[in-house]
Image (cartoon, rainbow, N blue to C red):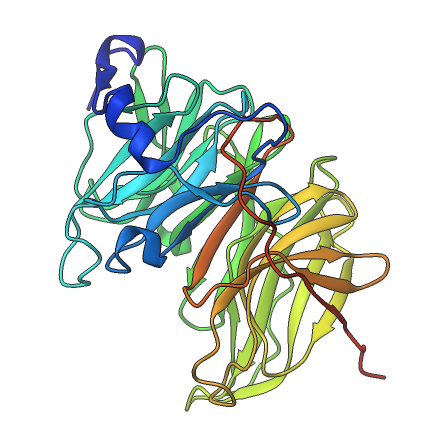
Length: 349
């Protein structure tokens, strides 16, 4: 399928007067750097919406219409636009019905920009802002696709190696030449793979799982700004889905495949994250996982790889998901700073 050129398909979906009601009031003293999804009471607590905040957790503002159900946000490299996935089924879990939307924060407008299939998921903009990677079942099987936002050309880049497993949750390398992605392999659990941006030369990065009855569950990978490392988390589960050992945060060297393993407490769950620089990352963490604290929320933490300390950036009754960080700045209306929690992770001997 071909799309009309990106610029030609821009359609205004909201006007300034409406979006001002959502809190887009300009301040010269605060700058949003983190975008994330959350189900907060300011939007009625009925669906997930997209929010921005500073990288210290302050000035949290919603940027999407509360009438919709929006998830999986990702910054454009200009720091002024966010692409996200709108679930028109409102997350009811019974069927797929999604579309991709761009919110342009400077003129405060929302746009549709490509012809979606209802199974399109997880949009990720390339570092040059010219291509969109996503995964979809539009070919009656799940594949990673790349769309050129200027020409409208779209290609399923994993078709040629479909026999390798189910690809999903991709992220670009900093130079835009490769993609890292999660690859489902039924016998051994999810693996981390990398490939060229055209789908050529796919290869497994994560180490093979030792034989046995347990399964390793891995979560979406993210490439470091230097291009040297890939981060992902993993847990080991029994056939009954009981957790074995600690939650592991893996930092793997792309060239040598050597791993630096950071062990988190067994009751922690980490489902995704992104990099600020090669020594600081953002993590989506739920503490009290595994039934110890069923009321615990998913929250966003800043993690220092050197000191191994966590700083809680969100402290809200709602679940906060899918953080993405940008080095650029965006003026937003300031709020009171949120409570900060600190924790130091003790590494097992």
